Image (cartoon, rainbow, N blue to C red; front, side):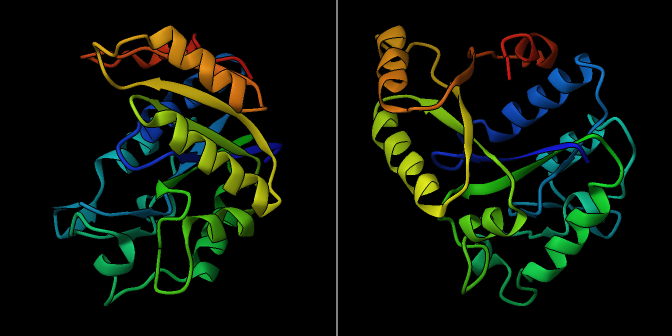
Length: 219
């Protein structure tokens, strides 16, 4: 691994996976090999006796090299609830996640790790997503849902990332509402309060075109 990033969001369902896959396509266009990881996922489905997550499968599919599902998504929980509740019988162990990451980063030049929920979402009864990001020691890319209330969420999350001591490499504006009023004004307001580069504005799409989205990004 020569390069790696931790992808976090202002909340759940803000487009982290969409941004992660767009970033994977972006790095591929730069001629780099890339692989992704979704360490923890809830709301998984059963497939041939194994729990699988749609976002993790998408990340696995878009990698430059094939990696086993258990490396891409070590903790898959069926209940669509917070991992610290969904995983009571099989709680996330940080040492296991770090070991899987060490294996993955040998396979490609770029590794992208997507968090679950928001920055302080609990992954077990003692640790949050933020603890995982700190343990991985990766620069953070913040995915911001451009919506009413999004500026508050973005400021709070950015401040929390700064407080962790990690570098925030930049942020991605994810347009999740097709008819949001004053879209450009909202993005400009976010640019004014987030003191890191805007890496791209990803437009709302009914049918997602990841190649098109990847062309909106610049790192």
